[in-house]
Length: 312
Image 1: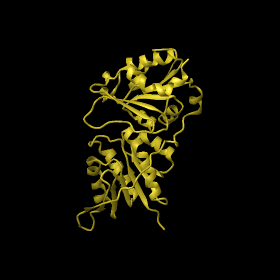
Image 2: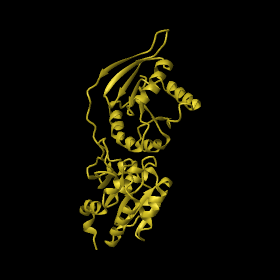
Image 3: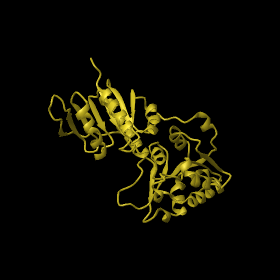
């Protein structure tokens, strides 16, 4: 019997991808004998490989519409996939607008397109034999999905051996396009100084794009371990698990930390759209205005239940 071929679409960003991991495992359980392909950005393929459920990948880094060579490659790979079902975890009009037409004009058989935000199924009939393609929609019964803890992601053992103990993990950066989400580096540094005074180390992580913030925290005390550019995406959950707690902005690594069973303090500026990190031991501090209004005292008070037993 021919294997069912399923395509899952989840392009990013990192935090959104992490939020979809539990859904991906749930989909796998619904189709235990199927062959799975993931369409995602190149950064997230590293996470997906750790999951052990995908047989192949289609990389879509959301390049410009005018990058015709890249669009041709993606269309060619979608057609070659000969998919029976698509789970759209991106669930935005842009994704449907881009890929509905691919299935309607290039594929040779009907495809089930399941939108996991609206939780409906759209049967995409290809345009063939001179007949126009069409989309038929029906609602589905939404099933519960249990939250995972990213157990499949393991840190480099040598990195774990190099960590000082006890420590608090700090995530002072975020996307360069969202500077309003960054709690001031000076505030993170002041928090690191308070921890040092109590005999607690700080481990600070970030990428080159966050070098200013990470280096400012690292300069606060000799008890800060600077891991700028020294961690891979698969290291982050274990770094959070081994910490007394983590403190981070609204950014992908913070979402990863929140999906472990470890404590996390999430920092947010006020937004019209509801915002928070969701986790069993996550405490969100939401500013009444700009994120600078969150005081070091406020974050310290949120940390105390997790660190006070370590005070010297």
